[in-house]
Image (cartoon, rainbow, N blue to C red; front, side, top):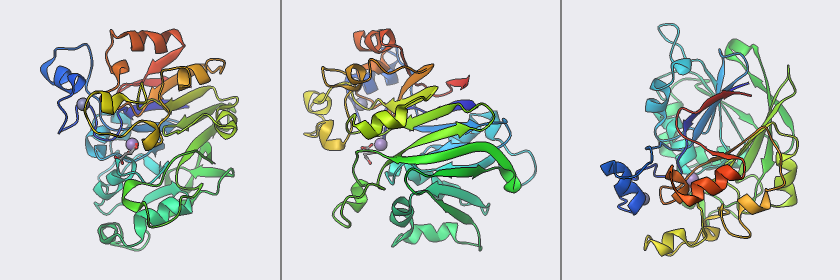
Length: 306
Ligand code: MLT
Ligand code: MN
Ligand code: ZN
């Protein structure tokens, strides 16, 4: 399985347009050892021909242009065979509306995430210009689904959605009660090798279900939003703690670095990194700590064979 990180930052990206925190200012001015990052999205493929995007970020156009594997090979064409949505957060879905130039799309999501995007959304009509513009493939929790390649060919990959502790997207809160289908991780399995990629980019806590989702995976992507619970309040960027936003911090005695210390995989990658996170600095002690724990900090353009 080929894996390519298109975007590695949390919502807002790095730097974020309205943020003058030390990281955002530093990367704008070239004064810190850090590279800019676009919002989270990862492309995977078994054969290098048909690609599946995990989430559709607001920066999808530039992300596609920045990776030759996703460029058209005919006058009207796209190697993107499907788009998988982990939840309805706008940093994960807004990019769908940017793919409106009359091309058939296949989107894999739970029914809850599908409804949250489609129902009552007048902008969705831009993806209903012709019959079959979007084919929704509904993911039932815990069930393996075939990922269909281009032209209906087998892609060599299956996906299972696993429920993660999280929250409904901000724009839907209070409309419907929270549901296990609101936020999921993926276990993507390559048929030929049996190797599994576990993709858990939004995780509120390490529960037994989360451990099951990671079990036996050759590669793990995990929620790297915040280093500490009070990261935003400490920088006077609002009152929300990591736990209020359903993101388990990396650091501290209860953080993911400690909680997953005994977990083994060939490759473990933190993704969905908020612009305030000290792991964004190549020379920070927090970066050194995650690397000493066997983790990679995702950056845009990171590519590997699984
Ligand atoms: C999150 O990851 O918590 C959300 O993307 C927050 C947001 O939608 O702004
Ligand atoms: Mn987000
Ligand atoms: Zn910032």
